[in-house]
Amino acid sequence: MRLENQTILITSNEPWGDLWYSKQNYAYELSKKNKVYFINPPTKWTPRNLLKNKAVEKSYNENLHYIEYENFLPIRGNFLNRLNNRWVSFLLKKYFRKKGIHDYILWAFDPLRLFDPSLLGAKLSIYHCVDFYYFKYLGEHELCKNSDLLFATSQRFLDEYTKYEAPKYIMPHGISSEEFELDKDKLTQTDLTVDNYALYIGVIDHRMDFDLLEKALQRFPDLPFVFVGPLRLPDRPAAKRIFIEKKYSNVHAIGPRHFKTLKYYVKRSLFCISFMDMEYHANTVHHHKTLVYLAQGKPVFGPVFSEYKNLGNIMYMNNTHEGLLDLIEQFLKNGETADLADLRINYARQYTFETLLMKANEIVETHS
Image (cartoon, rainbow, N blue to C red):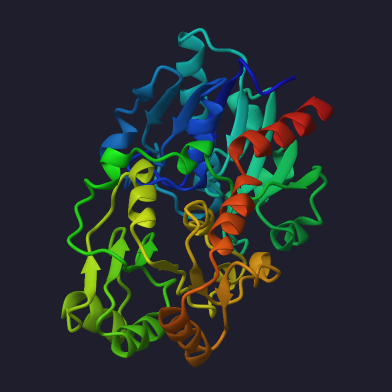
């Protein structure tokens, strides 16, 4: 079985929209050669779900559609979770049968829901781990147990799944070949009043090292710091000072933008930052936007992620605040050699979705 001319259901714990994570990117790339149905997570449960519930389909393009549904039951313990999973799986299976769709692959990114591929009637099932969920959820255990294949973005994740029998493969974060192409007109039309800035793209939440960020804002007061992404701030003093009290005039938080426009913000930047809090285990492995940064040849400053520990020739990494800020200061004073931009771009090109999906296709053909 080839990953061409297939119908693929993708489950995600993050809904379809302008914010794209691995799930949305895989859906988009798979839709170039397949029909893809992206199944959104349900919204908060209300009692009316018991009386009226249906699947609603909307379209992104001809081959990519997203499905909205609600849980029948509130998730209160494993019994209700399993019962709800059974009912929702039946609802979706019935919906696809009415559309004349009887033959599909389940590509699951969501560790919470739709965790029994057999109930959905999938002919092949893949659980794709793109983050570390600490095995807190019934769905993750069930998906690992019930899926035909296990993919993960790092060997560190796969090492946690040794007790499960399904064949396991590394499928790293990818990048679209479109991210290397720029429209010069769009490059000058971004809604920014600054250039040559430090850039962070992503959700600004508990995973960020706000103490490090505040030190950078203080040490480089004349350097603009641009943040593209939604604010979901934790209750931390530094986060409050930076983004609520707006104590620092060099902070420009512009909110989220559609994923396909992010490359223009990257291109106009001086360098990019991945100031992640390494106290969170999942943060220590990799940062999803790294390939987006490198695809434009930009320097990236951050801690030593385990997946990038051998990339000291193209990335600036240090696990101490002062050490990392010193690297930024040296870069601002001395610049860097001209060949580094091309080295970064060439590194990112190794992880295009064309390459990753070719590998995935070989795996699927082997196991189907």
